[in-house]
Image 1 (cartoon, rainbow, N blue to C red):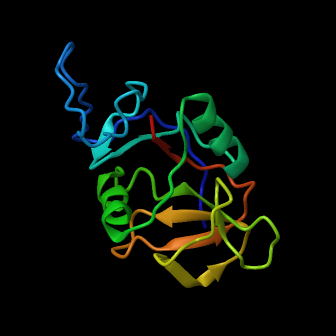
Image 2: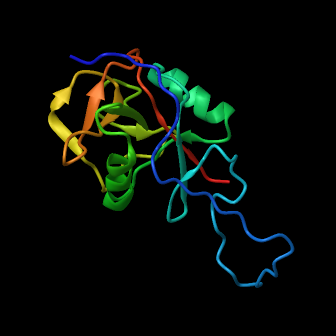
Length: 162
């Protein structure tokens, strides 16, 4: 059985780097996501800037929190990001976190927060289909996703694209 919890954000070795002021910009330089994200997005992996919600929320409220703080619930499209989240959540303190995946029609057709389809990468636990919102198990070695009751209060992982 899961228990709701409130917590203070602290995710271990976090980093957030801003470009040097007045640094020259190459005309063909790749766009780096995350440079305009609020400082609270202090967990960095590649171009992803992440943070946890400030407390436990139901899925819609976790998404609203992320939007109000310059982001959205995280969209996990590859195993690298999925593993990074699993490995950087305080194990034993936060067991499950909301991600930006949900089933708005309750028909097992999952979409991301922005209504894009699930895509090819998925990490579902096939035995956990008890709800229309998706969370991630941070204590399981596989970091499986679970369909869960959207009203359950737990932390969410926010992502900023800015």
